[in-house]
Structures are given as C-alpha cells and as structure tokens.
Length: 193
Image (cartoon, rainbow, N blue to C red):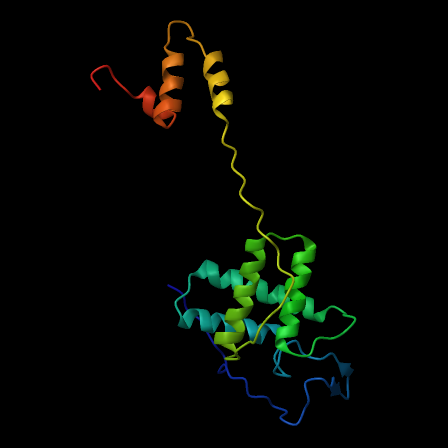
C-alpha cells in the first residue's frame, strides 16, 4: 500500500505570470537567483518529483518504476544546472542534450532508453506537455554474435572425448551433440527410458 501525502495541490500555476522563463529571478535580499530548471518558472526539483510521483501513483506504476523515474528526473535536473556553452531553449533540446551526454558517457542502450522513457513520462503525464521529435545521439546495442562450430570442429571435439573410469562419458557427449539435449537430461536417463 502506497500513500502520498500532499500539503498543497499539484498545479502548474505560477505566482508570477508576467515573468519570462529566460529571465533570472530577482530577490532584493539575495540578488540574482538562477533560472529554474523546468518550463514553469517557479518549479523546482522537489515540486517536479512530487508531480512525477503523483502521475505514477495515478497510473498505478510499480514503486520501483516510480523510484527509478524520480532518480532520472533528479539526474536530469542536475544536468540542467551545469553550465553549458549554448543554453538549450526548448524541452526537446534539453532532453536531447541530456541523452547525448549519457551516450558520450558510455552508458548502455537500455540505460539510455530508461532515462528517455522516464523523461517522456514526466513531460507527457506529469506536465501534460507533448514532446516533438527528439534527435539525440543514442547508444547502440552491440550485435549479438553467436558462434556455431563447423562440422569438422564438432567431429574433432567428439573424437577427443573418451570414457572416464568406466563411466560412459563418450555416450553422454554424443547424446548431447546429436540429440540437442541439455546437460542434465542425459544424466537423468535410466535404462528403461
């Protein structure tokens, strides 16, 4: 059972409607405050994670999936805080930059896909913002190479196998090769089988 306690409603309404996203916030006591991470100027990472957890609970996602998505959102927020040569403007450009940085860091394709799906879920269901095409550098899955020995190699292997201490090892290996049995299957055979 999972309960989510909320102290205030989860809305994207801003308290400062005339503030542009690209302008830094000004506080008379603290000076300039850096630009917020997400499309809403007042949204910070804790509010974004609350939105994401609420969307996950609404769709009855597994708790592990929710925790994984929240971790990716926190990493995405940390990436957006880093100084960048050309600050990305749209959400798509931000996600492209994040996914490209993951690919350049050498993560596997499944890790990058998990990060992409977490961010896609966040934007689509928590923020209700549809994303357009995202053309990021993607990690490639290595091709699955299988080696099948040639007939000559198989014959050489079978010729090298002999019986050990009166145990029919040669017969078992020939059964494995000729019938395509698993390793434990010929060992469980009985005389009456």
